[in-house]
Amino acid sequence: AGPLDVEGLAVGAVSAAAAALDGYTGGRGRFSTTPALTAAAFNSSGHLRIAGRKLQGFAPLSGFRRTRDGWIRLHANYPHHEQRLLQALGARSPAQVDAALRTMATLEAEAAIQSAGGIAAAVRTRSEWLASPMGEAAGSGPWISLTSSDGETTPMGLAGILTPEPVPAGPPAVNGKTTRPLAGVRVLDLTRVIAGPVATRLLAALGADVLRIDPPRLPELSDQFVDTCFDKRSAEADLALPENQERLRDLLAAADVVVTGYRQGALDRFGLGAGDLLEARPGLAVVTLNSWGATGPWSGLRGFDSIVQAAAGIADLYGRTDDDGWHPGALPVQALDHATGYGAAAAAVTLLARRRRTGLGGTARLSLARTAAELFSLPGTDDAAAGLAPPDCRTMDSSFGELRYVPPPLLLDGQPLDYRNPPPPYGSSALAWA
Image (tube, rainbow, N blue to C red; front, side, top):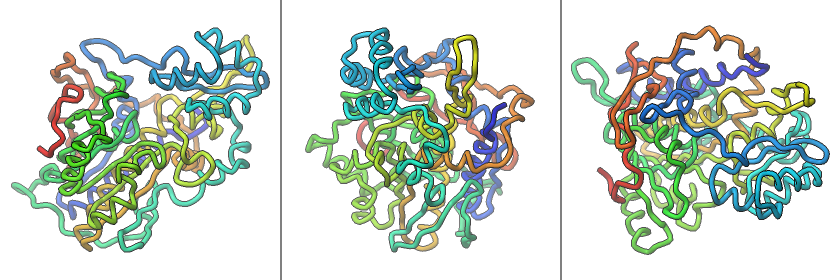
């Protein structure tokens, strides 16, 4: 339980994906969800066991730290982010990080770490965030904005498309039942961490051929990869190399969907900006997500769910007081990541349905900061999760050992969906469609 309706956000985001699928299939098969399914899926990493082992949590340098005049949240789970944090503060250990931060004002520390390429955000109140230029930019517009390649824009909220659209003819039914509706759809997955991989994990579970590409010099965290790569294929490639650029062009020429999850503008030099992609392929569905959105002074910065929570007022709202005084808090799960991920999947399916009807592709933009604004807009509080049934955990063999996991949070005609294949060995796939 807590002051914000996390369950409402979760159910709403997954319901948006279910509504998009109903539209895509043209009524052949009914998709739905339940609070128990969404609660389990939003904590998929907490329920996952890899050969009986729990997943590693936050790294030692990640978390809340006191400053001279308040609190700041750091993120150092990735080694290169840890190095940038240490360099920004002139520190060599967690103790030295604490000592350095105690001499600095919160906003001073935030600016120093961000300017060095590290990940940090001051713990702000909600009113402080809304009064800032970044907070104002992050809260503007709909949760998801869909734009067709002809320039038509459609808003999407937690209930799905906010204006009715004609239902296109769906994929064929087999023996009166819908097959996995995205069978034959090719998805290029250029995402990392949680939100983007959650989106493409659902698309893969729905039958799409999802090829994830990671840079070889910055490998994904292994536990995070296992949690989010069921039913996908995995490749490593330096996209700056000419031979890989040629393979990327071949992939894009046959792709149906591209999902990107890097900071604003990070992939533009490879021709992977949304505008460039749509100009080259007007029928492509392009979904972009990042931490801070497309406008505002932080739009080009790196970020994570926990960092957005700190900046946007969630950490302050969930604060508590104990013998050591007041401490900031956090949501029970990485709800901004997961909700954004299911929203991105809903957007991709909606764009595919629209392409079937009009022949046009389009783009969709999402951000964790805008999802935080959506959470604050919900009425009521999150007080129902404690009464939910235990999660329906499944088991599957994999190259990582036996996996105990929770299935996707969707029912098809009342029956639970499941993954077909375990996560593949990291980087084991060629840069080619199956």
